[in-house]
Image (cartoon, rainbow, N blue to C red; front, side):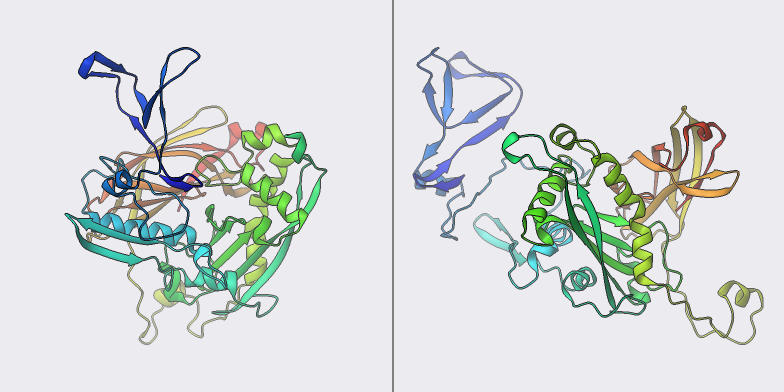
Length: 440
């Protein structure tokens, strides 16, 4: 339902099997709700949107009495969560909606002129049981700081310091549609990184970079393949297009990165839209962007490792002179067992079990990655082409590499099956001689 110059507009769609109801009317699997009309050309029936029926909108709980602004209201009849084994309470679903909004839309909720506000309420039998607004602070404050605070220096070595670098990027010439065609354009992406204290090591997106463009929706969190040596996690942002500026070059970059996003808007990749609309070069440029991003991140944080007077931790454990006052933080102990691995001629198929050693009923995370090992030693992470889990309670959150899986507290063990592609740096003739090893 939405508003337009003709007033409230109501329409609906059903997605149920083909069926027959009263008067022997037959219906296909999908259909539209509205006023039944007849095509004059062929006599076939169709549904036309209903305009201006405020009473109907109110009865459907779709009236917009709460807001005079234009917009869209949606009603889902028989709502269910396909990823959940059990039906959750409405209040828990509401909390999950808020958490997801904060995780993926915090750029839209902050700054001088926030473009988004999310409020979720729950009513049961006319009584409100839940009402809360999304607030990305304090959980996402490290990323908000990385995006909004002024730069403190060339590098970010200590907590709250912030550094920035511009990354040149060439947007290929556009051919289609002709009205939007343009020559190759050079634009800039902004990479900003800040540091947190050791307590933030447990943050679900520690050592990640949030990627977004002018729409201010996080496309993905780019995970680092390694952690800073000084144990001070980093939090970064990489943004492009209209998030950088409002000029013509930024607008062209905005359109390019929008076209590079797949239907789920969870990556910048060589999509079909880019393939058909732009000249060659996009695939390589996007590949270079991702393959060099970690190097640029670590150049900005310039790890500041100060030797401990007691010596390295491993040596201190071997030769425990005196008593240590430092207590190790408790982390989830996760064990991975590889059940099988098969080389398919350019691609690897791996199956394994993941379990936590000390179950505590809380949500936990697992990182699953594999590294190519050649004669010269350890190489890059293999690309995780796909990863499936044996239980819906173990949900893939990022392909990485390494891949990240979030597991509900009621599940302590699951099986995964992954397909792995070689990194771009590995030549085809070396694949048959390449061994792989697990790395989290």
